[in-house]
Length: 420
Image 1 (cartoon, rainbow, N blue to C red):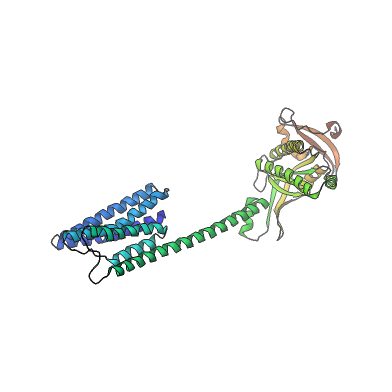
Image 2: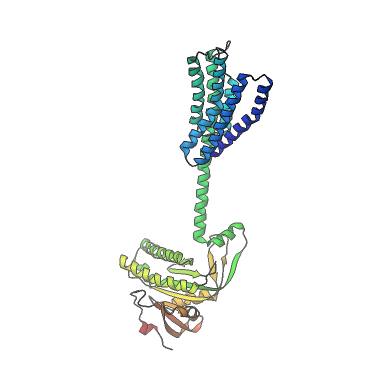
């Protein structure tokens, strides 16, 4: 509305400024006609008021009520000042008739409705101001409002249809604009919802690439850290509780893990049954990826301790972590997902499956990257132990220093730790 009012005012200024030199020339060549001078003064006042309206719009650009007042001021500056000029001319020349000038009315009202097709009640108020002045003020000043040969009924009918056409035009434009706005808003909300759903499935950089074309999305990362977590004795748990309870349990636990992953800037890869997989260092490289995963692993244990205390559920998890190169990408045409491949993924899975309940088992590669953080964590060597598909491997159990976090876990280090 603000832009349209400004545009209408600029057109009005262009019109009056364009004709002002011609009126001035006419005044000078016609022997300084006082009625032409009155018209020049009227236009100068009109231009000043329109400039004032431009200033008010800029000053009150975000205040709807003030903008509406500016519209009325600009509208009456264009249409009502013309009526003032006719009244003064009629009184000064002792002309008993106030010229209705229907063409001027129609041009003024239709132009406003075309340039500023918003808020039809404002247009009605603007029109009523002109009509009330013409039909009420002029008679009070002794001027007739009807020309000879033009009946009052005909004048009123013409005036009615001029105003009716303008206001109906504005009304239907508003209705159409509102419908288009609601439709566009629904489309935008649907797009935002689709975007959120897509970003819940894929990382943002991968989602942007996928939207650009159907090309295969695959990247190699020289070093990332992968975490697997698994609920201990989950199969036995499913045999003792209804399916709905199991799904609700997993949802509550994994939702807490999702929040931790977001807090630490990690990328959740997927859940497989009761297993949870997360990685750091992709799709955007992360300098301290091993430290971020270790911090999340510790908080996962703490979160599970708090959850079991709140729900009286006797559950525990094994966590395994490994660091190394991976290939990441999206495959398939339907139900696609961002996934990882490579020996690093397999090793991280083995760290979990060969771990201990309530323990965080890390590979030697991860241990080397976390060794400089020994002020935060304790490392208890395990191994070499036989890892399926890998052979003997030296692994480590990670725990925070007791002064940092009290996990209250049931890990028996005397049994879990195998001295070299």
